[in-house]
Image 1 (cartoon, one colour):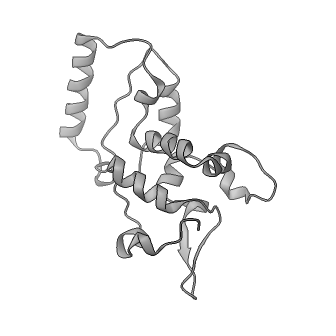
Image 2 (cartoon, one colour; image 1 turned 135 degrees about the vertical axis):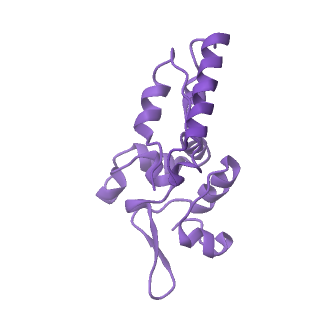
Image 3 (tube, rainbow, N blue to C red; image 1 turned 90 degrees about the vertical axis):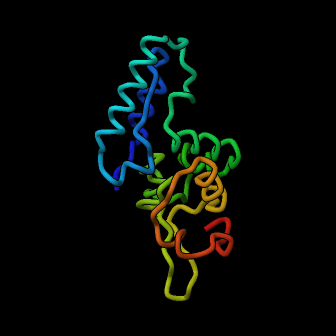
Length: 158
């Protein structure tokens, strides 16, 4: 599965004279489709012709997963600290951090069911908040843990 990584968002968000357009996040795993690319090109052309205000708000230049991360940081200071600070005792894998890895629970951010039924994660954080925000932002997630089980049965901090 491939998603826009945060590097693209970082560059676009940091350039107040650019306006970022992103391929729909839920469509990207299905491959790049001509119709979507044409739609984005037309949208870009319209913006160029109509103009847009500069400077562009950095948050407006983020894709939906970038906006989700910002909101998650605003609502959960402990999570924000985990992803932005370097604290003693935090597994090194948690510092291999890109927003898309957290949002899509990849690598050290992935939760795994242990043989005893409990859930383990190298980088524990409030998954309930993540699931709520993914729903709010309309980000589909293809992990079996979320789709096959009721998320209310999962502890908030795994």
